[in-house]
Image 1 (spheres, rainbow, N blue to C red):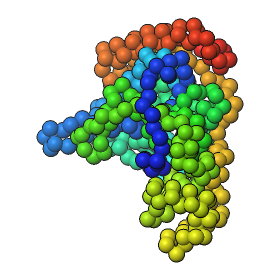
Image 2: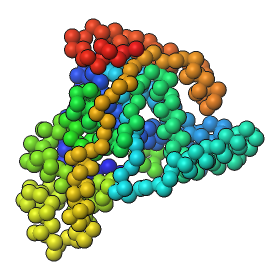
Image 3: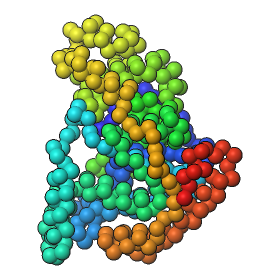
Image 4: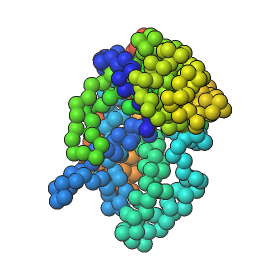
Length: 361
């Protein structure tokens, strides 16, 4: 879902030139979801459908990751992809024992494929236990083959991206959601794609988008609030961890926080107008703790970029997932060329960090 800060945050048009020679922390699940939204139009019923392989597994995210990584390297950017860990108990969409469920259905899918029962394999591929976990697992594997470092966050990918920027391991975070700002991310990049267009949900319509950058300090200054007040404001609106207060949208929340300074005062002064029954003192403390003191990895021991393993990538994408070999081979070769150019650019850069000096190759 993501916090709805549309219209409140100050987004500046982004020039890709300022990203050259920089490291970008990528909110991987958020980006992968956006890649899956580029469907195929079914002309028979004028609806869109997912592009799947012969086993019924979605494959557009594979192409999307190849193009996105290539796009980063072409622009002389080294990405770090961050993935979600264990969801907080407060998250509203919790799948009980989802890992065990995935491992069980994954085995069933493999058996169905071995027995050439394609109908059963496709059915399993779109089950809730298999669909998303399988996409995430395959995405991680592909990124490793491409030589791109991944981080399995202990909690949320957004908080890990924010931590990397705060610790100056990365220069920017990249996500379509605003949640990284709630975790204190100083610089957030949105709409950074080659296509410069976005698919409107449930419609075969695309709208033009402009890459943008959000500076947390500028946003807070423009809103005339501090970081802690931004967290309180977002709790009123609604986050992935709390549904928010009915009848309170972004503008109303901002006015309330500006006027009453904090969440407790808002509740005290407006309790006759709004229903705060689900927002207990304990819940407020838990929500604030998630954002202000996030559970993240702060020490990174294995973070390296390397040339793509072309043969292994072709085997994984073409032999196992039935992508077009000629097309994939062309993309990966181009990706390898762009990585070499990117590496040379970083090596010749005057602002080389210790991280890059020790962790390229």
